[in-house]
Length: 146
Length: 326
Image: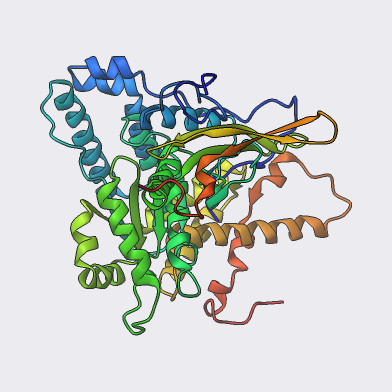
């Protein structure tokens, strides 16, 4: 698929950049905290673009003052779910907004097989298209292992 | 639960944002400082230390210790600038003393000093007790403690009556779990947060004896002495002045006598008892003025605590255990 020659998942902010270092992640988190967002850590092994709701790792972190707390949680999630995608999500609780304000991937599995294009013939000469992640052909929790 | 949270947690679109944190010390200026004065000037830590000296009555040994600690931190900064310091010093402290001796107040100031000198990033204080750390059932304690620790990161975690964390009489108590997590974070994330344990002296000593790991990780033990009678009187006057009240004729002497009697009675909580006594005196003053419905009251009268307001206290009528006079 030459539209994405690196084969990397591109969802959320910064996903076309090289992976952020922990120091860079801390700076982004700090920015969000200054804006009053609540950060949370989420992970998944089914990174389909329409899979909006990833699994939560712990509760969303309200009332934090410093990025160190979020990074503690992130490090723990990385240890537990090394073979998953992990993202940080910032929730803006401003009245009338109440939705996700920032979201970016902070951890990827070592091997990212990517997606295939699936064609389905329908009535007449109509073609229906969808994407299908190669990884989800294997059962849950075995998708990104060796 | 936490004392650090101020104001509502929501905001309204278009409304001005909450007050920004005080500006961080000018990093460049600090890293080039070569004299103590340069460090104090560029961090404005000196102002906080002086304020502590000025605002808090008595507590001479505590102030001396805080000054020592601040001096150590400033010198460490200078050493670091010349590439001498090896690692961040351990800053965890224990504040011991009777109730109402100003432990929380000093902890708040300490947080500011540490923030100004750049040893904690945010300088907020999260005050917790056993309830906030220890869970109710198996598996509840660890997440609860971690949550509090995460909130305190970048600032100071103040654990009031820390000895309640350890209950030797119940071996299944979850407090031990909280202590273990606390110890781990105190050791591994020293530059992320500073822990201050507070409580009565004798019970804290027992606590440290049964938790040697905790004792060895705490670098500074500060003991808060009880206030002398003169100090308490000075505190009372400061409190009244803050609320725009003052002692009327003979009231100061009456309050001195009150303190003398009160000190001999049980459950005296130093500055806290003084505040409560003054609050009750204000109540009596209010009902005294309230009774005179027709009179125009001057600002003078409204802000004066009379001797009679103080002498009506239970302390003058046989002690705090005596029934309240109707």
